[in-house]
Length: 191
Image 1: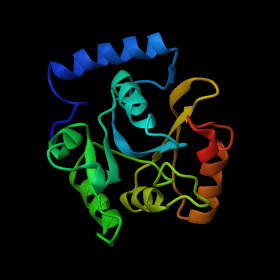
Image 2: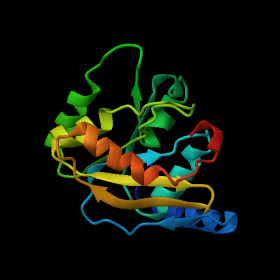
Image 3: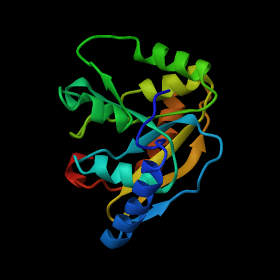
Image 4: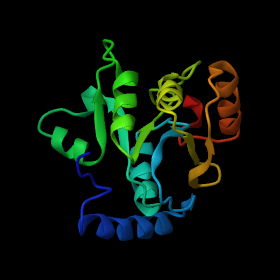
């Protein structure tokens, strides 16, 4: 996999220090421990604001995760596409089916370590139902789902625990959603 902001020698440790300082100055607490083996799907919710992205960068740098994240292709315009990819971005064109689930599963099979961050809402706007691609990727790749979150009410962000898909998508999605029921996004009206 390509080098990103999370894996660039010299720059990553410098940015990690800046991230720790900025989180401290702004009063945000992080939850989670550094993980030695990084092979899982990371979901981040609630995703309600453009500010989720810089907050995610700070938290992920502090917690030493090496992630790639999926975002709509319009976030990758020229001349910024190189920067967005260095920030870990994977452009997804949602206007047509591109076999994202199968391609992601293939990537997991080819790499001993891989973390893909996916916001299950698929957008910052209010949605009635989460997209299930993250679940199918984890289930088919036989990797756990790490429950990442933002809770603006507590000024806390990070990750809680791993969830292992059972193959019963409906039941598993209910359990995952239950964890997020008490979490408040930066723009609570969009949750």
